[in-house]
Image 1 (cartoon, rainbow, N blue to C red):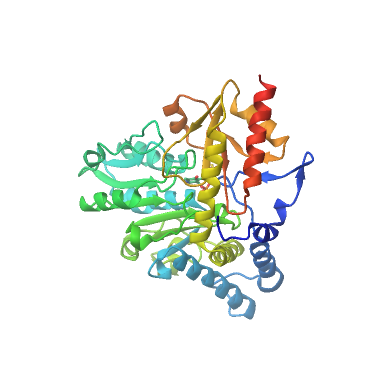
Image 2 (cartoon, rainbow, N blue to C red):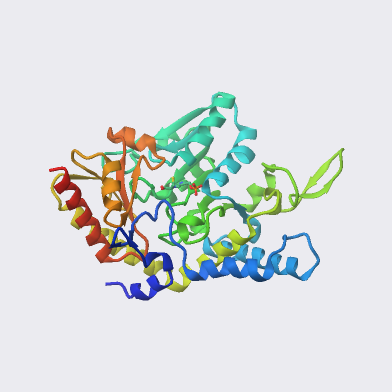
Length: 407
Ligand code: C6P
């Protein structure tokens, strides 16, 4: 068993200590958004209580403190993803905004009719729609890496999908609907061998495993803070410095410029060139605090514990009659999607809620995955390191309750 003191960890997450309809809350919707430890809540509150000011603008003391805290958070993100320089870390609203930034600033200027953008069948809509929009604009083609019944990427034809027309490959490291961990390092190597740049969507990976952009050697890596114990509305885009230097800004406004006249605007240096307008300062500080928190728990340790949770949950849930697990890869992180025979997932979610078990039901913003399996939706339990084996038992009890009610 893991060496983590889960009960001590849970004390850091005040929201977990409550009852729903008289049942202890079992929060198993972490893939949608995770809960925040007091260390993050306090970092945000302290900032507003003591340091609030705009960044990069004022010479007064509060502005300097706010700037130091904001830039300090950037360095923490750099360290967290093992980037080489703070210049490679752009603060954004989240994974969605990061992908849109790359689509507009990097891909759009070089995309022509007949070009291809390669994604996979298990992408979140955030890693489908921005590319589809670009393709529609110029007459380019969205090419999709297929998937197997186990919910793994089918890479048998992968080499053929990487063509001289492919302008970028954009793939998720961990599927939000299935939990599958994709072999993105190997895929990146193959794409690079053909000169194709790579974006990795790490939104469902960073809360659960170490992120190392140098090891992956990806050109872009994106994630959201709110899935890794930080506030909503903050996330990061990592990009290789040489590539970011060449890219044009996506949004214009304050702070992204060196000088402005009606004749000409000179853009600011990296990463500010991509951060137009007043940024989410408190969010970035909260993200820095979340990174500190995860590192204090130990990312390898939390990953190992979550693996135990997932294995236990898979064995317990998988052992039940009349239930189908969607996504049965051996390589999974923290997600258990399932269907209960004869019951719509939305009814499952409602009955679970009445027993204090919070899960997400629906298509999980991954409709092509649902289309592949021929289902409208799944019930999805997703774990974080503050979850317990007892909460997995509560999940199993809730499933049995649903089955009793629909018998
Ligand atoms: N998935 C889920 O319940 P944003 O909304 O920008 O923070 O993250 C978008 C996103 C991108 N990629 C993946 C793999 C994701 O899982 C998500 C968000 C949530 O699964 C909310 S839809």
